[in-house]
Image (cartoon, rainbow, N blue to C red; front, side, top):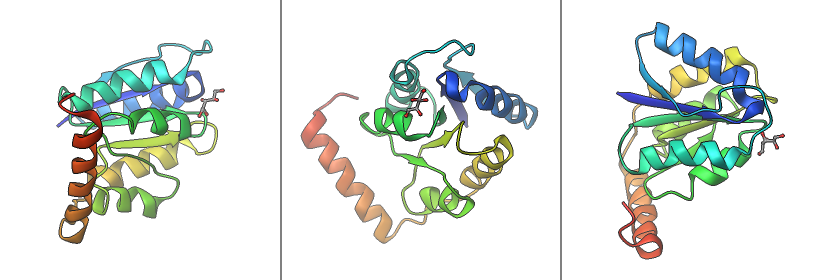
Amino acid sequence: MKLGIASDHAGYKMKEYLKKRLREMGFELTDFGTYGEESVDYPDYATKLAEAISKKVIDKGILICGTGIGVSIVANKYPGVRAGIAYSDDVAELIAKHNDANVICFGGRTMTMEEALKRVEIWLNTKFEGGRHERRINKINDLEGRICGNYR
Ligand code: RB5
């Protein structure tokens, strides 16, 4: 599985922590920036990762800003991207099980790094349940088709 990670300045420290830990665990992981703590604009980095998911260059991604909100707004504009903010362990499981989320978002200013790592592991180890949830994902795909045409 190919993973990606990106953040703005508010998520930079958490990005570096998760990157190191996930690489130690053996994951192939592309870093889409930012590469320092200087103030940047989160859309510039969320967009790089979301485009890579949308175009199937990577399979799943992790996005971090101050709250997780800004990066999730950007990511969810891309066809094929389903981004959820894992604000608890249960939610980290549910965004995989019910939403088949291919992007997990965190708040670098609202969560600890250890919480984020635990939630990444939960999310990666949880399978999509399918069934009624698949029907709902299909409705999202139909909607994207109507709105975005053949972007992908
Ligand atoms: C940056 O200060 C902050 O606004 C940003 O990281 C994010 O929280 C926006 O949603």
